[in-house]
Length: 176
Ligand code: ADP
Image (tube, rainbow, N blue to C red; front, side):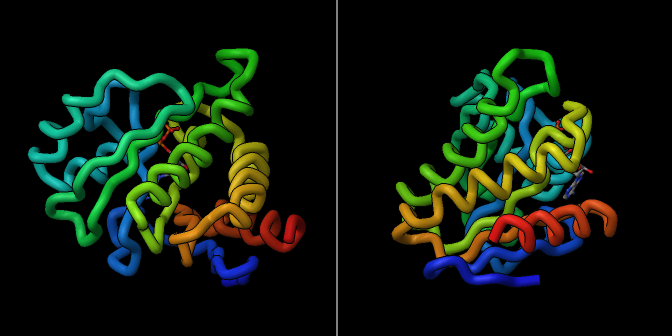
């Protein structure tokens, strides 16, 4: 599905975050040390190659809610924006920390004049954030920021499963 909010198109698609050649930046659901590992971070580091890990070490560690930007090396994109999501219910303000990931990623995208970006569902894998709740935070936060965007024209949510895609589609319809 695709919808336009002011001048920004927002869509949810099913797929892998490393297979989004139509966006300038992809977002990594990173760990604090910005190392490889499983899930999104593993896929991104595997596809980007060891140069990405080297650049990441200049920034690590990062705290929950923070984001940093690197080049994308062998990925078909220009940048990777690495966000550390919160572990579900581990800290009192886990909802704010997840919202900060999306806000800080958009801020870095704007500072780098990025026109298109793809987000995975941050914190919903090993960090245990239930998909419904995380989707609400992601979509609300992004919709709350779109009026401030000057460079971004396209925002994509990339979901790994059909069930997750349907949650995003429903939430986007509900909140628009
Ligand atoms: P976190 O540690 O922030 O929970 P994970 O990488 O474990 O991050 O998972 C985040 C979400 O991304 C999960 O919903 C998972 O199913 C999904 N996911 C895993 N691999 C990929 C991928 N290659 N592309 C897009 N989404 C993915």
